[in-house]
Image 1 (cartoon, rainbow, N blue to C red):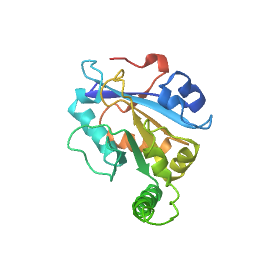
Image 2 (cartoon, rainbow, N blue to C red):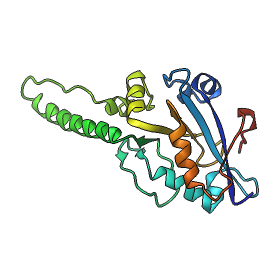
Image 3 (cartoon, helix red, strand yellow):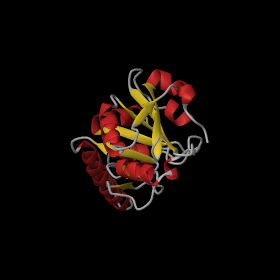
Image 4 (cartoon, rainbow, N blue to C red):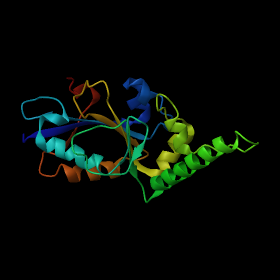
Length: 207
């Protein structure tokens, strides 16, 4: 093998969520929605995207295409990270629709700030929450039914890092109604490597 290889377990939501983390299991996906777990293995068998400069580059290229939800619950625009860093969630915009969700959220925050000032002095109508505020205001960033449907419409795919580290640094789950766009994009950034090896769940490696 070359510097690294990618292992991927992909299945429909009803199978994938059965043995996944509690966070992934609670996503209100339709049974046929597609989920995948993606991990990297270095030349010497070491597990993690950080074990090879080329796998770091490949992961960073994917991260740079997505809006990212960082630790302070702020959403950052797509940009190339200086170092391999996995935000809390990543959103791959679809035709400007996620950007529209961002705009609606910024407008909501401005109206909420205005409401808090006005309500100190007189009756005022509290603005309706934005879709993203519903997600960001949850301490666990849980994705409810309304948020999930909105993200399906606004994103080609959503990435959730595997925080346990059991599949090595940088391993992640990705989900969408259909993951074809993700795999086309990911294959393009790992060109020249062995590409993606699809495996059964039992064939995934653990750190």
